[in-house]
Image 1 (spheres, rainbow, N blue to C red):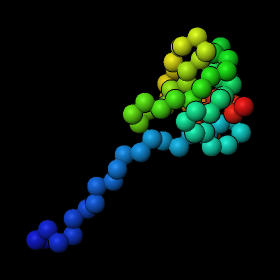
Image 2 (image 1 turned 90 degrees about the vertical axis):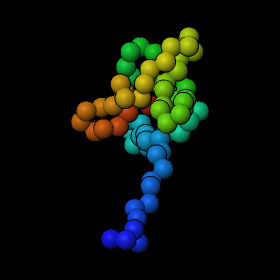
Image 3 (image 1 turned 90 degrees about the horizontal axis):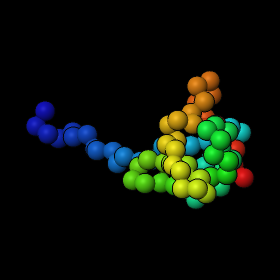
Image 4 (image 1 turned 120 degrees about the vertical axis):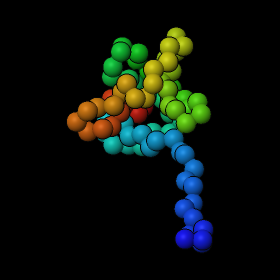
Length: 78
């Protein structure tokens, strides 16, 4: 109606991640990955997408680490 009430555009943000114990994860955190035998990894952010990067340089998307029952990450914060 005459353009008086326009919706504000929401800025896209990176998702909030929680480890297996419910602790929030932030970029640069060291974690122990409980899948794919990656061991200790660093959480990195590229654009709006998180990756777990191992010491050998292998990257795995955060989406592959989601636990279906709790919707938390299958990682443990160190």
